[in-house]
Amino acid sequence: MQRFAQTFGVLCAVMMLGATAQAKDSFDFKSESFDLPTGERMFTGPGADPVNNNCLTCHSAGMVTVQPRLSKATWEGIVKKMINVYKAPVPDADVAPIVDYLSNHSSAGK
Image (cartoon, rainbow, N blue to C red; front, side, top):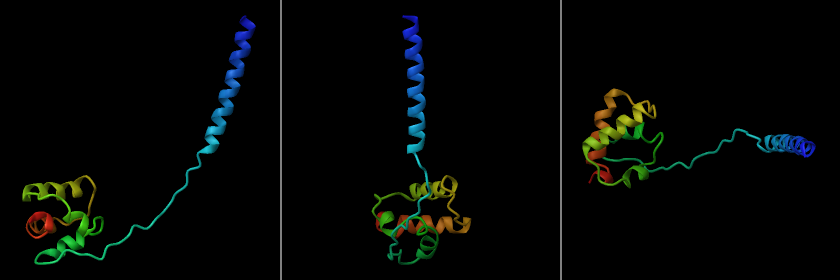
């Protein structure tokens, strides 16, 4: 019985090594690149330039305007999150104009 257990253990170890080697070979990671579709829609109206210059780098105008109605304080929190968490390179001077525009002029802010 002990010999059977030893043989069984060795057989299991060999099978595990084979499965590990096979699994290792089946995962072939490679870098992929793709192009995201670009939208031609831009924000319009007074104060739209800072939004177009900063926000359209990552977001489409349509994506922003389908958001529910949000307060100025909520938009300010979102803009600060984009800067602090997602590292959006938005100049400090553009933060207030962006927040004002999003809370007053976008479809989401109406």
